Image (cartoon, rainbow, N blue to C red; front, side, top):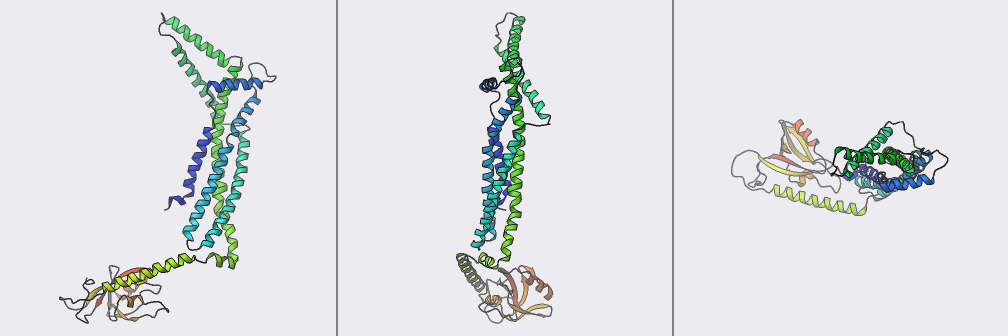
Length: 394
């Protein structure tokens, strides 16, 4: 029920943050300054290729440069997931083994060593993913479709800009049409002509399309890698490492040595609970005279159920459960029924609000009472004196 212990749910936030950080490394492919810089880079890398042809080597170099920027976000995600996994593992052990500090420390130490190795394995796996993405490849039609979409968007933008630049004060439709045509021809020469600027525009579209394809693929693969090698392997490796302790009795003895402060606090609270139970039982059994009716009197009693039940010896008499004695308790343990004021001869009538119809039914109800809890039992008691319980009268 504790949301802080839901490791995978919290890991999803780390995965989303990784995706955002990868997206933040994307160059502004459509910015004019980026295209101008790309033009200068392509000019400096020109070799013997003919005019109008782009160099494939340039594309490889640019993509590798952009993908290198993914290393830092990926490394941060591994570190975050390792810290989160250790935090959750520690909190789980603290919840399960609250009274055993040595066991908690040993558990945390094992988890820390496992996660340290997992972090190294993940770092190597991520380096391999980045290396793979630096060698561009895809058979996905998305790349071609995305490149065409980018080119279409740029053409649409050019048409819009041509109309915006056209003056509204033309004398005729023909002159306005001519100005738009000139603007579009200029755009076409700059983006599709045999020159460095046109090559850079086309290269920018291809780089943008492939970058988005590769980024999505890398984020998915990186998240699956982290899931598998950190969270997926943690439980199995913890089990393997902790199984070694089973054969070391000295270690087991140290592990299950309770915290002295916790033991003292528990004993204090148990004593306080017992005192409150006794006080409650004493107040519930204060007897005063009942001035009406005849026959047995119902008396409600609160009994602290111990490891040996309510401590009463019961007998069946005419189908009823009759108290015929008190069971012997271990040394130093008080009989709960006797401490609650139950008398020999009392008849059990109700257990926790449920009517007892027969001896066997009553035995079944008493066996279901959980230890270390309070039970409300109604007894039928013959009038032995003029004092009855006003607080207990049903």
